[in-house]
Length: 359
Image (cartoon, rainbow, N blue to C red; front, top):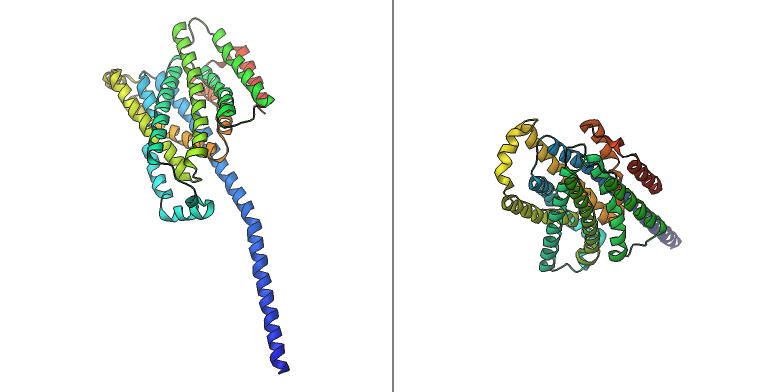
């Protein structure tokens, strides 16, 4: 009898140890899970940052290469900025599989969140697509009528615009640091216009230079508004914490923007001169097609990085990272296109001061 009781006590002791061991294991896993999620978050942010910096720098340089070698179609330059969206279909298919959706649902409890109405999404993607088409067209005018160095410096104003839009639309705190950045950027952009010569280094008139200036400023403001609206849509309408949501936000508005660009290309009559433009391209037909192809690819890479950073952090942070690419572009423009960035020393001084404040 005593032996049976001893065995029961030993069994209860062993069960208690196993229970305690399982409990401690579960506690350890629960403690490690937030750390694992944090590491994954940093990995995603780093990857999106690389996409944005590399894609934006390469796309801007390729856009300059297109114009410098005989390209003159503003609507074609607008078209390639959004036409690369079919390249994202394999990614959309992969991340939309049942296995991925199940994993995402378990991690983020998306099944408990109400999904937006189909009509709401159609209106959202249609509006964003038209905004992108207009924004891309203004950027195309800026690239056509301005040197790459000046164009890149003017694009830095989008951070100031984004700070204002984020304050009103995304409840971003308007700190003294942000206010200081807005003031410095405005002064820098103004000096670009004041110091502009009547004939710039590209042989364009002062009127075209002014058109390029205001189109680039307008494109920066429109793009900043677009970023803030995308962040607002992720938070208030879409409410899905998946990479598929990021891809949807890139693919469908890009499809609308591409359609609008095709309409503009035919309505303006520029399609008639495309064959001649291809023949007269200084580096040949193959280089012409490859320039447009890789411009489309790099803009999509840049856009995925931009939307990913909006999704993971905020529109303002995405714009800050995008602005970091701006000093890279003038340097590369000097190396590859022999742009004279030292032409306006006061402009460079103010811009350098702004980047010093940014650090």
